[in-house]
Length: 139
Image (cartoon, rainbow, N blue to C red):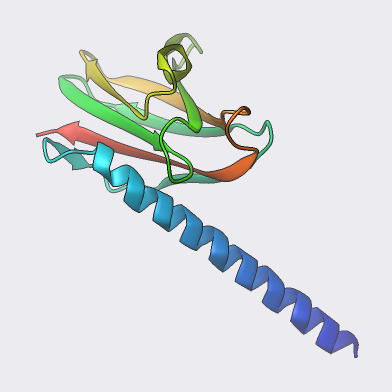
């Protein structure tokens, strides 16, 4: 009996995690519209399942002399995800919160820069969901 309960619990957890992955895949596909043909995706996956006031952090290096597009999505419509870009000293470089939660931002990098991108759900629009960031660089 104990093995049966453990198996059912494990199967349930696996099914739930599969649903979360599928949700993130769907959101990523919808978010790709913000990485236009002028940009080449960096090939990395920046995803996190968020609840309530949780914040996901993504660290990356942006190389000098490059124009980047950061696209951020959660859910099936734009504006659900707030993202903020900080330099290594935690100085705020940009937040889409100041721009009506726009789903993307183009950033021209003069010198190589290590950044942290924080992503959180807009509490007035969603209380849980998958946060997806896509990064592309201009051709």
